[in-house]
Image (tube, rainbow, N blue to C red; front, top):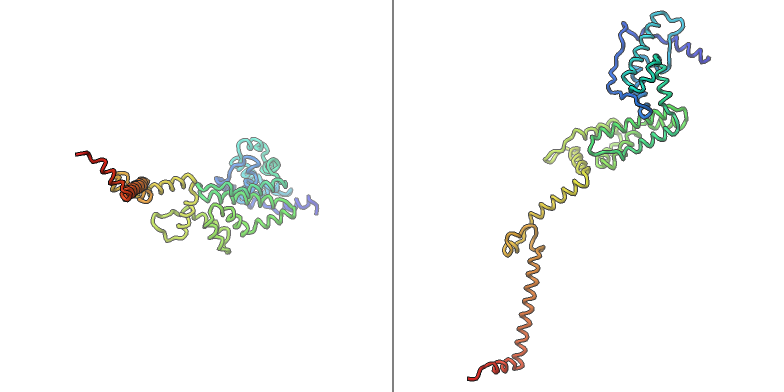
Length: 335
């Protein structure tokens, strides 16, 4: 069958009138979809919008460019026009002002889609490699001051973007790579591997649970944002683990300041028993075996004792030689 024949068969198999009920448009909240700003967020935006188009039952119109068959009745054509208007109006909410000005005159939602895809979609080997680098660089962007949910959201976004790039190509190696990215355990292990340097105890604990899915590991990690360490000893192992992680996440300056304060308290508790008696008012901050004044006193005492021993030895020697008597006799005045 020719391409034209396939297109004709596809058109004839679609019924647009069954997708419109009483001319009431299908509304979907678009609050969580970030507006398209350019190539940097096109892949995520396009993936999100495909879900929107499916929910609005206009996927074939917007993505594939489906149209009513040549023999369609007026009701079918009217339903088609209504669906096109609904889809076109959605673009106003999901693209930036600059981009909207480029596509608003195209009028048809499929032509708008093709225009955006042609300008921002890049299916090249470099794009895939660049996205791999973006994913593996995530650990360096981890911020312990932010909730761990922020990091997990970034991880899921980068993982999804990489998987979409891999799936979009017909190359065998990309299709195999996409199957690898679809593996739940692969996604789980990459997340844990990215966090091991920053949440070592938590990761070590979760790594022992080989039967955990990515969703279960994610939930355990998200629970950390809601657990608060208690001032008393907690009976919860997870709470104790969280306390340890937060202590380890403190900055070097905070750790140094805490150590200095602890050392200062220990110094204030020390008391020299020698200074209490001999040097009142200066007995705090050290012990007797650290007291410099006591050591100085002991050295002076030793020097004094040695001097006395030397004088005593000299007197004893002179007495033995008789010099003590003669000297005494010469000093006695004549009567």
